[in-house]
Image 1 (cartoon, rainbow, N blue to C red):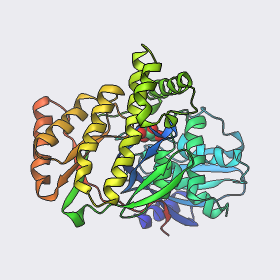
Image 2 (image 1 turned 30 degrees about the vertical axis):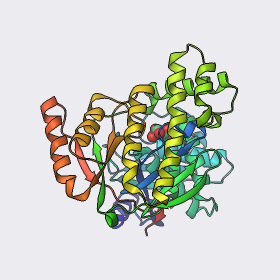
Image 3 (image 1 turned 180 degrees about the vertical axis):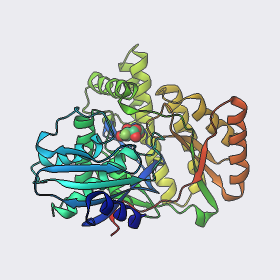
Length: 383
Ligand code: GAF
């Protein structure tokens, strides 16, 4: 893919690129809606990547082109980039240029051609992959010396302020920092990280990603409402973030929240979800991989019943997969559509996939896309 992207760059801009970079999408194994509560998450990188061919420019011009979007080259001036002025795909790469410049980095322009294999709107972080690949390319070309977690913070700022989506830090950090064969145990408070070996094939298992094809968007309001509800919960409890409510103090905290049922549900999800992440880490570290299945299922129930961000298609994947012998299943990502994950014995994959496809057909839903995910590498230079 990097050759084709470099060739297209040359056709578009008249000379070959200075380099080509790739940044992956992600699935989250466990730890949902905890990242903006300073909590724990555990994503791993997909083999699907956003690829960028990039050259520097010294004249303040930013030229952007995507193989995945109709239309020609978009030309902008780096000193005229304004938060929330752009509602198109170009807001992701130009937002990164804006964030780098706002942080004082002398990025004087670029020619960029992008192509991505990360499915868009599927809850697999296609936007974060676009941001991170551009950030890494500019970091290398302009010799900024920023580390992966610093690039992730800048990309999150681009998405929060420039694009206007109030997302947490998980997706950008996953894309920038994941390692092949590992899940990333990330503390979103200080971005400390631990790479946890996650090789299901060696243990006769698979992790399926089921893209329900129900499109979601984080800027559409429900995500922001959940985030605001969590912040209200933290304020009512007098803590900086819900991360500071210990699991064994949850009942007392819920009591203190009185009859604000909505905030109580949000708080209960976040506090129990942080505990589930730590539980999954300890099970994986002690070699009890199959035992994570019920923890994933409990995570789904919490997102469905307490956080209320599932949808009939995601619930159908989970229920059907479990009824067909899956070890565990849950929705993954921001919710309201997107993808679910299914942990299964390798021998059961075919039957589970068939059951899910049949259940979708019977319910009159669009056919899902199913693939097995193996933890891949994080963002890197490929040419
Ligand atoms: C989306 C967001 F971008 C992440 O920051 C995270 O909050 C996730 O939803 C839910 O865990 O992917």
